[in-house]
Amino acid sequence: MATLIDDAAAEQALTSSLMDVFEAQRRAYMDECPVSLDIRRDRLDRAINILMTHGDDLCDAMAADFLSRPRLMSMFSDIAPAVKALRYAKKHVARWMRPERRALEFPLGLLGARGEIRYHPKGVVGLISPWNFPVNLTFGPLAGILAAGNRAMIKPSEMTPETSCLMESLIGRYFDSKELCVVTGGVDVGRAFSSIPFDHMLFTGATSVGRHIMRAASETLTPVTLELGGKSPVLLSRTADIGQAAERIMIGKMMNAGQICLAPDYCLVPSEHMQEVHDELVAAAERLYPTVKDNADYTAIVNAHHKTRLYDHIVDARNKGALITDVNPANEAFSREDTDTVMPLHIIQRTTNDMTIMQEEVFGPLLPLVPYDSIDDAITYVNERERPLALYYFGKDRNEERLVLDKTLSGGVTVNDVVWHVGHESLPFGGVGASGMGAYHGHEGFLTFSHARAVYRQTGFNLAKMIGLLPPYGKKLKQTLRMQIGK
Ligand code: NAD
Image (cartoon, rainbow, N blue to C red; front, side, top):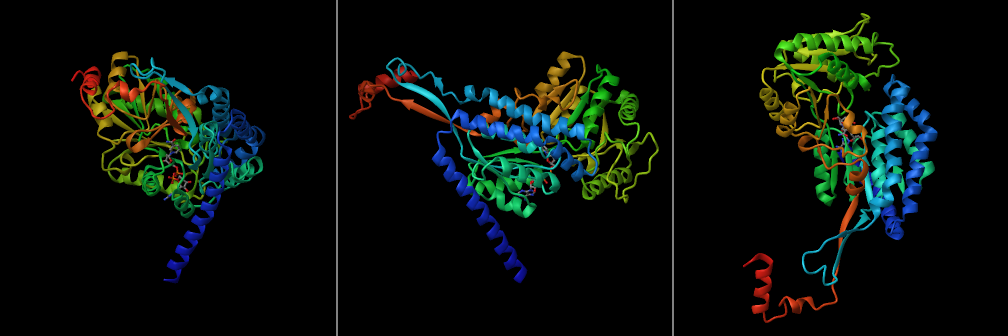
């Protein structure tokens, strides 16, 4: 009982300290409005400066958190995309901010009335980020958040504590806590954080946690953007260049050891090509990573919990009849019990729907191959499952490609490769259905974190009189209605 009371008191104290920060940011935002172009650019610049000046330190922190994570890959996957996003926003923000004139219905425009959209900062944004790309998924969204003139509170992941602490101290040095601040902690902090009445909340993480976030946000009617996960399929056409596809799939799958929201989760393969595809995938993986254990270019599984989760999938699949190839070209010793969390690629065939690996997002170096007979069967297989974050089609048949894109729905698509649609600020990034809602990146990020406020300026004419809206209603109003809808 005492513990329950202590827990409740601690949670209340936590929420109230978060509320203090939120209210201070809110007041500062209100005082500052309108948020000038110079201020927005200055904040974007400071975020860029953090990454350009301390990128190496952040990569060291990520290496420490993962125990093994290639520094160049961290530069490519975390620092560079965030810098690019922030620079893109800085370049375009002046244009994005401009009020937009809208045509009005006849004859109001002619009579001098005016309509426009003014993009207003929403206020204080709550940003919750995951561990797999801890810097990218914290600083990347700041591009849209800061360009739109907002302030933000950030809750990074407890699974990457070194990186989260470093981001907290760097952001504390470059920003006033009333502009931008980081709150570190675990699920309890996340829970308290998501109860704050933010003006918008961006959550990146698991679909299951996304449901909690949306439930919490419903109490405060906080609008949410949910960037979630899911099982992103690869559909290999009979017209695909299998060797090329296998290498591209493996590059995307094995980067960060498959711990990517957009990683190919499973491959749909024409049944007669199963063996060839399997062999090409193995060959590509062996070429890319001739050794696994002490390979400085390979990333470890983030912690023992996730490694066990992945081995559990393997055991479950094997017990249910799967055929599993572990791609271990140098014959190194790996085991579930080993404290080392590096794990080789496993290709899994003869899968069935009751296997956990076919039900949950893999998020690691396991790749199930699922045979299909006709392209319609493959499409049905995708559509019988929750809508994925991404869909990948490999093939040369443009009609078939069109059919696949027309008949399925996913957050995004890459054709003849995997993952890369995420790398372009000119394209929106987001999920659909169970893989998320809303989008950001580039202009969509600015729009997501702005309120599109309609402003209508009335004409000098006595409009109400002209259209017969002065009681008593009668002939004139009927005439107006006839003009409007023909009735
Ligand atoms: P997670 O959902 O476990 O955690 C994400 C964040 O939410 C962390 O900061 C965590 O502390 C916080 N959190 C956890 N429980 C919470 C709760 N009840 N209330 C409030 N906050 C809570 O996700 P993860 O394990 O860090 O990341 C992996 C997942 O994220 C995968 O499913 C992956 O697909 C997804 N992901 C999606 C994207 C995307 O852009 N769509 C990008 C990266 C990762």
